[in-house]
Length: 191
Image (tube, rainbow, N blue to C red; front, side, top):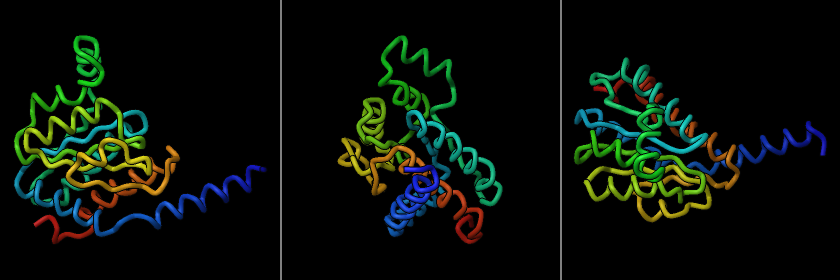
């Protein structure tokens, strides 16, 4: 297979994954973000690897551009940001505690948690969602077709119709952009 053929195939597969987005479920997630914003609730976002980068990117969009458009600024945090805190928790406790321990410091009932995972079974994500559910936070998981453990735990899931890491991570970032840009481009959502 030559590069040109491979690229065309990649793009066609990405279009198929995009076409599988359950729009009604994304609407429900945006409605939860509206509710969190109006209620001045905190929003925690996190993931591993490429999903950690997506979490940082999403919080940048939500915390800056979406907040500029909103009547209430978003109280949003990527739990992937503080390397010294993450490594201290991982070293002193366990890597599976890196997100849950941060939420213990800040989270309150009815806050919103969004995690992204291609596998859906990373121990640190599972433990964080378990803790969030037990402590009455609303949980959202953006997953790949493997779904994993998180598919049976989160209050709302959106599953990408692929197990390919690049395609799933691209789709998750697309959904994050949909959430952020809904507030930027639909002014009545922010009132």
